[in-house]
Image 1 (cartoon, rainbow, N blue to C red):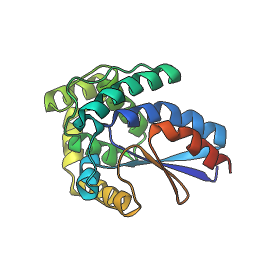
Image 2: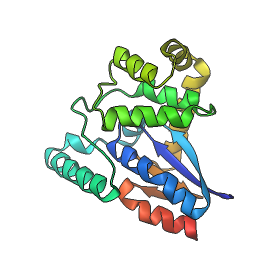
Image 3: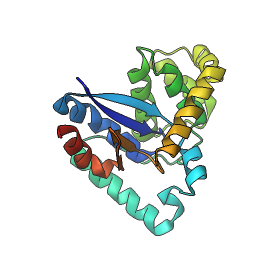
Length: 195
């Protein structure tokens, strides 16, 4: 495989969850590998002046309907989390910390499912500990990991890189220098990978 699909994401983005459910198939069909790029969406919003669609009532109502449509089209479970939005800083540090670990994909799966299928309030540390423990992670090890200065710097650096490259929200994909925003543009991502 010499094609790479970069996936800039934040767990707090429901559309990142939907994209995540589809990316392995898209990458496999294209003979590409996924470069997982966890970033802090709050930092991206702050730097770009963007905001969550739910902050605009009419757009938020539409987004909820649209999420349900896409979940149905993809055949994946999704239940909008009543605790949304939550501060994802610790969760995203976890993703940055596990990024080179064989448990990375299990961690990502665990967090996305807890947020967007099981409706867990992952803004509460005790709930995060319960969820991770049930998935075979050691919550004490997790706490050390997300407190590590190198992990903090990695997340900050990836977020800054995303902003420099024009990212304004999540999910954002890059195929080479070509950027695509939104899980509703996955057909363009697949097309770019085929070229």
